[in-house]
Amino acid sequence: MRFRRSVETRPALFEDNKKGICMSEFAAGPAGRIERVRALMAERGYDAIVVRDEANLRWLTGVKGVFDYTFEFPHAAFITADQCLFHTDSRYLNSFEENTPAGSPWVYDMEEGTIPGWVAGKIAANKCRVCAVEDDMQISFYQGIQRGLEDRSVACMLPLMHDDIRKMRAIKDAEEIELMRHAQSITDAAFQHMLGFIKPGMTEKQVRNELENFMFANGADSLAFGSIVASGPNTANPHAVPSDRVIEKGDFVLMDYGAGYCDYRSDMTRTVVMGEPTQEQLDLYALVRRTHEECVAAIHPGVEGNDIFKLSKKIIGDAGYGDYYNHGLGHGVGIDIHEEPVLAPRNERPLVAGNVVTVEPGIYLPGKFGMRLEDFGVVTADGFDVFTNSTHDLVVI
Image (cartoon, rainbow, N blue to C red; front, side, top):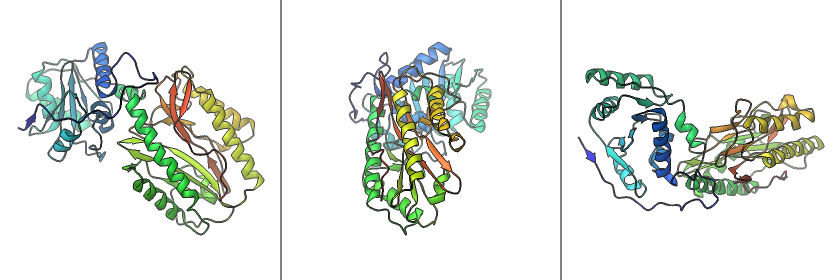
């Protein structure tokens, strides 16, 4: 068994939030996140919780640049009222120790044997009677914990957490917000670069490659998601896959992309036109822009996500294009590119300060063209602070 009780840590990167958009009753950063989890544990009567999801682990630990999101699930956290235990393996241990924030409560462990067996051992050692687990935990892992408890003749309830940690992640703290602002600054710079790069005769794939290469060369350490670059009739497909289609004069070119920075994401969509636009292109772009800007102006704490969505549907529907706008208005962004909350019919919960969401209305005319305009930002005490700085004007190339 290899057990590390102390690690040499680096100073924290960011100061406390100055805008008052964090949950003020908790400490800032990872320490506050642990406090929030423990408050929930006390409320629910949990003796411990087990966490496997890497985005949740990144959020809880504050460790940057170590999680690789391969869906191997090589780690597990075991949290009690007074312990934060983390099981990993030799591929990651040194990196965790080198990148753990100052003052971290986490103790790293490489105990041999299966991770479910390790969890069962911790449950037994701590005499836990209720140990909650994530909703999306692998069935085989859950059953492994059960077998480990049976082997130890230990009885313990293993209730599901009902997505509790992901819901907590919907309220961002100062450090998270600054990381996303930085990711967006890379994304904005990439758009400016592409305005001087895109030419008729290029393929969508060539544009995609240049876009992504620029982000990596200018500070991104990952892509937020697989970039969408579409042209001409392909822009009518909201999630078009970049193809070998050659960009032509008169085409709309749509770019939906983002940079990853220290495990946090940005998300932005801009639509440009190759040569002078038609009146129809101008009119529909103006409608999408008006929809976007009116919805952004309507965002504030207390308004429900579905109400902002309904506003976007009304504006576009009243103009006669409701049948050509059939996706949600926006979604949360953070460690994952799609997080809570959403601006969509299913979200009847009010927005709160600290929510980070996109606003991305679009219109898509099959066989002709489509367009989308997307920014993202944070809900503040009195409105919405947009991270995106790129122009809303229809850029003619």
